[in-house]
Image (cartoon, rainbow, N blue to C red):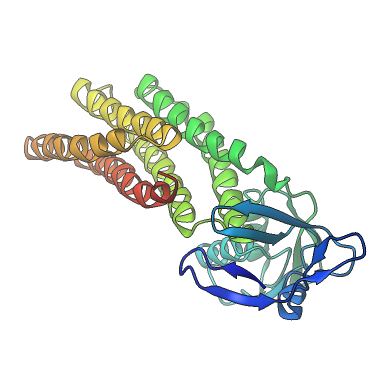
Length: 308
C-alpha cells in the first residue's frame, strides 16, 4: 500500500490501495473531496511529480470560476480600492459591485486599470461587473516577478538622476506598471498555492516602490533642489535594493546578512542628517525604503531556507 506523505509532518495524509491493470500498470483512486475542490472530472489532466518524499499529484486542469458580490455604496475611494484589490488578489474571476453615485464608479474604473486582465464588462444604473477576460498564463510568473525587481531598480535610478527636474508623469506611469505586476503576482501566489512568504515579499516590494514615488512627488511639489548629501543617501538606499535583488536571485545568505549590517549603518546616518535639520520628510521616505528592503531580506531567509 502506497503512502502519500505530508512534506511538513512526514505523516500519511491518506492511504489508497493500488489496483493492478491488465497491462501490469498500477492505478490508485483520488479522493472525491479533493477532486471536487479542484473541479476535476474523468479524463482531466493532473501533474505527477516525483520528490524525495514520494509522489506529488497536483491539479492542472480546469479552475472553478470564483465570483464575489460587494456593496460599496457607503465607502470612500480608498475603501473601494482596497475591496477590489483584495478580491482580485484572492483569485476571484468576477467582481460585482453596487455603488451609489458616479464618483464611486469612476473610482472603480481607476482601480481596474491596475488589474491585469480585468475589465468592466457590464454597467447598469448602480451596479457594475469586473471580469477576468485576458489573464496572463501563470507560467509567466517568474518573468513578471523579476520584472518587478528591475522596474523598482529603474525607478530608483530615475529619481536620483532627475531629482531636481520634473519627470513626475514618467514616475507615475512606472508606479502604475509596478502596481499592476505586484497585484497580479500576489493573485498568482494565492491561486497556485505558493509560499505565503513569497506573497509577503511581493507586498513589501510594492511598498518599497511607493516609498520612492512618494519621495519624488514630495520633492517635485516642494521644488527641492538637488541636495548632494540627500542624493548620496538615496543612492545608498538604491545600492541596498540592488544588493537585495542579487541576494534573492543568487540565493545568497551572505548578501542577505550584509543587508542587515548596512541597514544599521544607514539608519545611523539617517539619524545624523535628521539631527542636523536636513529635510525630514525626504529622509523619512528614505528611511522607510531602507527598512522595508531589510525586512524583505529577513523574510527571504525564511523563503529560501527549504531549498538552501
